[in-house]
Image (cartoon, rainbow, N blue to C red):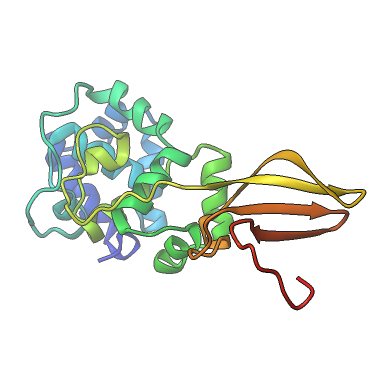
Length: 230
């Protein structure tokens, strides 16, 4: 179930129950926001994902239950966070941008922002905005936790462990080749050329990058026999 499909009034009631509150005013004071903001969630029909994240980490409530009303095996590492309340909320807000995006990609096992965007039906431009503005995408984080079962604490803050053996980390890797230029019929060493490994064939032994004017070639210097004008 996606967070946008949840009934806002029911989610809000579960959040109030988790904190032990009976009034929206109490929740507003806890979150240090105006009561009108809480009322606005009901008018818009959606509780912000950031609020759900904070409630789950603040109280230990199961995130699946908060969103759907159904209990599942908790994916929250209760007691692992040393922060509570406002300090925890500020840490969540400061954990946006590239770090939280990296953890979401790892949780889903995706390599690119496009894969994540296609899966969540979010444009890559929106995801790029998260990174550029260091924004914490609360709704997407909650959806990711529900989809993958990874620890919400880890997903939101980086603390603890993912708790999901299927969460694979794809660290970027690059290949460094010797770079050469051609001048007056001679090869001249010109530093290094760094590229994605997919650009380089696996069967080569001494691959180098050769450049002349606007032309460039990948050359296997291990080959000793030349033919066909190459």
